[in-house]
Image 1 (spheres, one colour):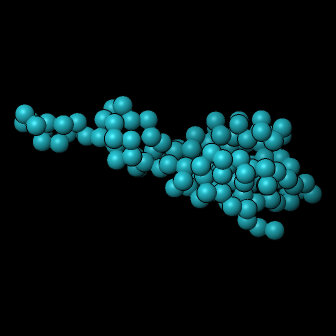
Image 2 (cartoon, helix red, strand yellow):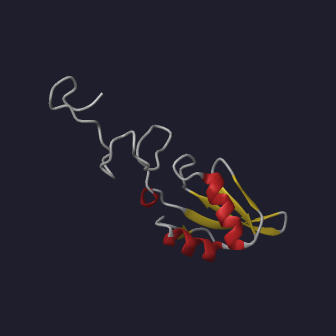
Length: 116
């Protein structure tokens, strides 16, 4: 369906962000199909102690729009540490909070350090 469907003025529907036809749009979308850009996802980076060791946890990211599996791979490489993508966000072994806040801000996410 497009604008003025069935008339000589018919136009394909376009994305509100990139203004390309919906079929050509590559904007990240959430589970509802709405555009969810990095600047719309407030990331919170905190460190936690688990079993006596530090773990850095990133939350607030949309799992579909951010492609958490790909992001986790980049984070693990950036921090030279193990980690995983979870349903809530990302987990990285060790205390890498400051590194990840700077890196996420560089990617366009409004990241903040949270917790102690």
